[in-house]
Image (cartoon, rainbow, N blue to C red):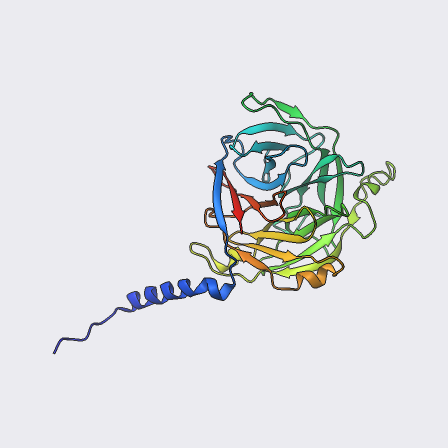
Length: 319
């Protein structure tokens, strides 16, 4: 009689892990998607891409910037990975820049918002957001000199209940309200916004004595990132929010963690808090080891991503 085969505990463990990983997508409700690396950024000065915003002024152009401690500059990049502008922000400092957003101002002119909202140690009494007119870009193939932005405006922000860490900056395309999505190790992120009915610029236009008075954000909703495992990533990585964006029509909100993308529907007339309480779609881009920045394309369905490492990829995710 042939001896019965034996299996080591090590082999059994790895076979179990393989079976678990094969079953995991169905359990996690992953939405089918296609990831495509469209370009690798040629400019090695962009070494910690921490924010991404679609240009409102030039088709096929995105804006990005470096994380904390970098120059107070934003970079325009195209779909070939070329740098098309480097713009230094007037009267700005990069304490902990974490996200970018683009939108239109009161005169429907394109603007960029820069979120200096990182606070890992929860020690900043205020954080701030800069706004500049969206700069022009150079023609393709030309050497790009550094330029200076138009006049910048900024607002100091505080949170109810004390300091928060955050990496998600959003501006609603319909109301122009600025929003901040916090980052928390337990996965419980809060969506804050400028007070209802208050235009972001109203605070800066009230006169010199009130120009730097902090804006107290208000809580408008909350989300919970579950902490799913992914090959090479810990559950903790899926709880930490690294970026967020509204779709161009305001009907969706997408947020990235280090390992996943999540998206919520925002039906017209439904309170934001109620919409965010629903179960989101989950996408897992397979070309990025670490998700850091996210923005929507003009179609409202395609998502664009970058990551905080060199060489810096520009990735398109299509559902």
